[in-house]
Length: 142
Image (cartoon, rainbow, N blue to C red; front, side):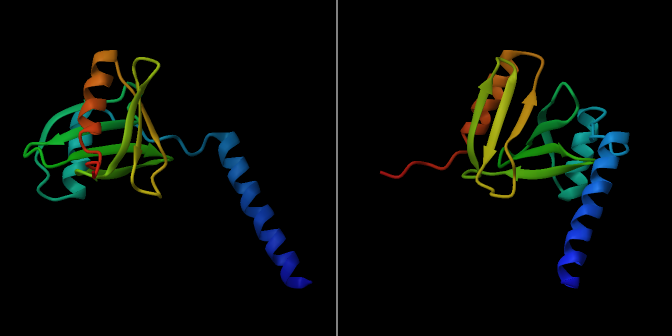
């Protein structure tokens, strides 16, 4: 009986802390100040990452940066107060779909990575990057 009370009490205590944190706005969502910050983070995470063309989401909560060699795309997505970084190579993208003209929804073949939504300044930008991402889908076998 004591173990059950300990477990229930722990769950209630953690839930209360999460609720208070959310209500007070203590933990703000991470935001990139610009594309240069995204490139710095990618280079720090993977030494030798040579950035090529890139794009920053309008809200600063994500970015896509092509590696100069063309072998992969660097992806940063805000998750809570920090960023999740992925390096996308051929076969890593499940799909990239443009929603509401300027929003790109990205799903990866990575079960721990929740779908990401990146909003850009134009429909053309969203479509261009969706095409680049969809080129990284696995090749269908016949």
